[in-house]
Length: 194
Image 1 (tube, rainbow, N blue to C red):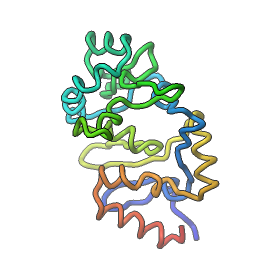
Image 2 (cartoon, rainbow, N blue to C red; image 1 turned 60 degrees about the vertical axis):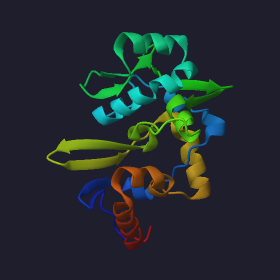
Image 3 (tube, one colour; image 1 turned 120 degrees about the vertical axis):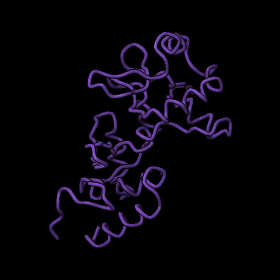
Image 4 (tube, one colour; image 1 turned 45 degrees about the vertical axis):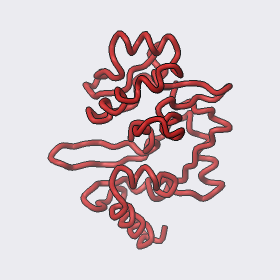
């Protein structure tokens, strides 16, 4: 069957790679490197900034002195070179909410959430990765599969386990777009024989 490169699901444009590519994070190999690589922080919304600020006192002790200093100077987020709001970063690359457990990089926000200490988990852009959301205006949203060399082990593991991107990201996709939309996405994948 010929699969179109872009399709519409529930009013959202999606790249077919979200259905066809395989992905499954392999933390044992990558050690959470996505939290400390890159040239900008994680994209955030104004609402997420408020949630992060509400959780800040809870996670403050888990943050490095450098991260605390950056937050004191510029806050939890800033506008990057494209004018998009992103989490603040340390030394031009590490997310300020990165904390460490041995060699593993963890998100202090997510850890506090999983421990029942806060109601805010982490930015949806982090949870949805390797899907990147693009707002085209007028309510039009597009979802693309993003390739990043630091995630090569996730691609390998995803292929070994035969887990499509959309299945790996079931929970965050439901969190962002709802169960009804996710079920429609699954129906589209099934109708395409995927």
